[in-house]
Structures are given as C-alpha cells and as structure tokens.
Length: 323
Image (cartoon, rainbow, N blue to C red; front, side, top):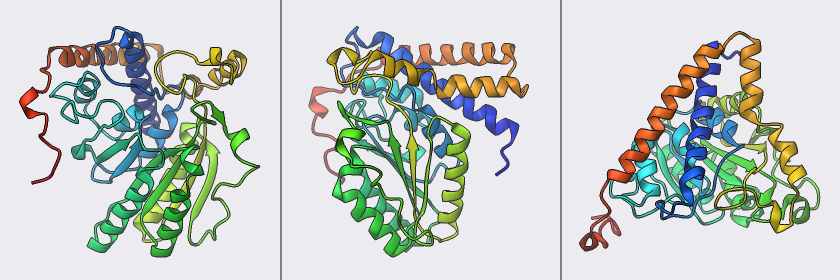
C-alpha cells in the first residue's frame, strides 16, 4: 500500500520520541525517584508506531507491563506518564499504578497489565461490546511471546473468529519471556498462523521494519472496520534490554553480549532513519530540530513529575470501586 512522505516522517518521529523517553527513564532510574518497576521497550518501537498510526483515538488498546511505547504512540500524555512513574497524583493512573498499570481512556489506552496474557480476553470482550453496540471501533491488544504460551490466547482468537470481532491480536515476539527463549519453549512454529484466512487475517512480519508493521496493521484495521473479523500479526523483534530494570542482562548467562549486539545492529530507528535520509525525507537540520524539541519536552515532563504532589494518605482507598 502507498504511504505518504509525511506519514513516514511521522512514524520516525514517533519512534524517536519513544526511544528518547525511555533512554531518559533509564538514565535516571537508579536515582530511585521513580518508585516503580520498569520494563523498557527499547528496540521494539516500530511495532507500537506502525500499529497505532492506523488507529483512531477512540479505538481501544490493551497492553502489557512493557507499554511505554504503545501508550505514547496511542496519544497518551507524556507528562502524566512520567508523573505516574514517580507515583504522583498527576499521573495517568493517579499515582496508583506505576509503570506496569498505565491507563488513559482519553487516548483510548484502556490499560496495561502485569498479568501475562491478561489483556487478551478483555480485548476480545471489548470488541464484542463494540460490535453489539454497532460502534465503528477497532480494538487492538499487544502481548509478548510468553503470553502466546497461554491457553487464553487460543481461546480468545477462536472466540473472535466465531463472532467475527473487530480485534487485532498483536504478538510482539521479542524472543524472550524473562530469561526463557522461545527456542526452548516451543517445538518449532506452532503459533496461530494456520486458521482459515477468511476467518482470521494472519501475518508474520519483521517487527523492526516500521513500514512492514504499518502495512500489515492497515490491512487488519481496514478488514476489521469492514466487518470481516479479527487479525493476528506476529511481529518478530528483540528485547535489547533485560526483562526488567535497566541495562543488559547478559551477565545472567542466558544470552550473550554478541547476540544482543547483533540485534542492536538491526535497530528499527537507525535502519529507518538511513532509509529516510537516502530518500531525501530527513535532512540533518530537520533531525537536529526534532531532537532538540523532544529533549525539551522530555525534560519538562520530568520537571512536571518532580514538582507534582504525591497522593494523600487519606485518599488511599479512592478509585478502588466505581460509584
């Protein structure tokens, strides 16, 4: 499908912003001002950018604990996200959720979850509700290869096919579930790619190629809006950082620095930047201005978080139940 030059630049801006935000988080995390576990998305930015570019604000998404990229790509508020990492009252979850439990209904981000595979059946339920109400919305759920081991994934895809639900199942296969590789957990290729294509649009793509992600997501979203049912897109990528926290986990012994370096050489950001520059779509001065503006925005977000109040002790029971 044809993609405009402005869309290409927009995808790059989205990916770059996500990367810069997470590098800033990583650089400050050990100062211990952010009182939350973090799971960095560095190296996987093309997936969130490519998928969310095809979604409307009102289209719901559900994400995992590794969700900074999806939250920002869906239009989430950077100030409120960074405040949430600092557990402040101004955070998108009012300081109650931290990094693993971001929620912002104004952006269509219906929540991230620390439960592996937890968002998958909820997304199917949301898609069912939207269809029953006659609303022209597409639901997307992002999950990792560890969640693809869960029975609820197959149950949800089966139900979505049965009811022809407008839902996208986006598998971010970064090849590691904590410290367990897919090669040691799966006997060959046995993820959900064998369904009748009339019932399920299925694709396995290079998740580090933002244009490939964008193209597959566009097909899936168009199909869902036309009432043709669900899609499953497996995006092959790599988790560059450790499972949680900051830095490399090669010292733990389950993977090598050489393996990590090989995938860093396939960086979705650098590869796409080179392509845009070779097409004459990204001049050095444009890139410098883009980076300057982003750096100022990110610094302002951290200042907002630092200066924001903590939740009050007497409000600890608020927001537990809906009145």
